Amino acid sequence: MGIRFLNILHAKHIISRPSSKVVDVPKGYLAVYVGEAQKKRFLVPVSYLNHPTFQDLLRKAEEEFGFSHPMGGLTIPCREDIFINLTSQLNGL
Image 1 (spheres, rainbow, N blue to C red):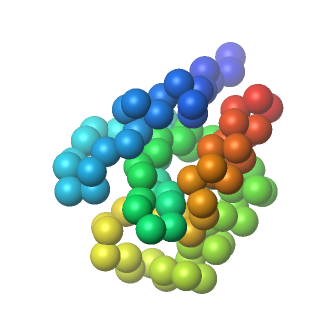
Image 2: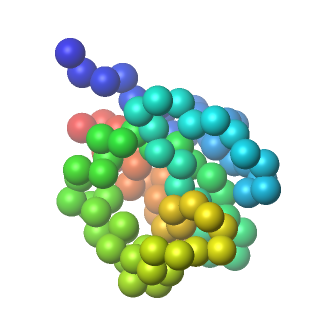
């Protein structure tokens, strides 16, 4: 039985939250912060962690921020539109 993924574009209304506001993350999802100047919060399925393209993003995050980042969350150094495009492609797999 497959896991039903949140459509990244459909979920945009629940994923863009101020970083100071703590919001529960549904089971099976991971909150990440994406963007250059202003960071937006996205919820992605944990299954994305196994995908090589997403792992490349995580390596870039490690190179840029290390494991200690002031926002307290996983921040991915990527433009928002590129991230949405990538996750939309992963959603279609």
